[in-house]
Structure formats: C-alpha cells, structure tokens
Length: 124
Image (cartoon, rainbow, N blue to C red):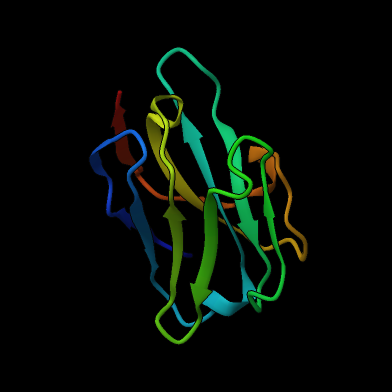
C-alpha cells in the first residue's frame, strides 16, 4: 500500500512558476513508476508527465512539453513537478499517481495509487 500526498499548489499569474511535490509513504517508492495527471472543471483527467523508477526517463504530454519538468528523489520518497511559463489553460487539480507497471503509461487505469490532488489556478 502506498499513500501519496501532494503539495505546492496555489494561485499564480500567467507566466509564473510553481513546484508541486508528492510525498509517498512506504519503503518501496523506487519500485513505482510515477506520474502527474490533471483535471480541469468539466474535463476528463489527463496525463501530464511520467517518470521511470530510476528517474532516468521522463515523458510529457504535448501541451506541457518544454514548460514542465518531472523529477524524483528516491531517497526522499518524493516526486516533483516543476511548472514554468504557466498559462490559464493549466488551471486544474493536479494529482500524482503510482504504478507497479514497469513503464510509464498515459492512461489512468495503469496506476494503482492516487493522491488527493492539489489545486493550481493560473490567472490571466
């Protein structure tokens, strides 16, 4: 069982930056592929980015590529999402997720554990 707790959300102006963190419980964090998803009001939850178990490989959706960076610190059981050049369209609840699968999937069903989410609001 893994428990995930996100933090770092808030209100920011367009063009600004935020860094989200997701702290995981348990001693097997490094065995999980980690990802960030987001869900805007009235929209489906969508994949934002994912990172391999070791952190050597990262994947991003086209909408955030070049602006967002996902990283992890296995010694601290934490995954991060650095968000730069934020746009009003990035406004959403952001969720981290953990998967026992060996590769990064972009579909929700591939993830076994989810955090409660943290709200990011970007004003224009």
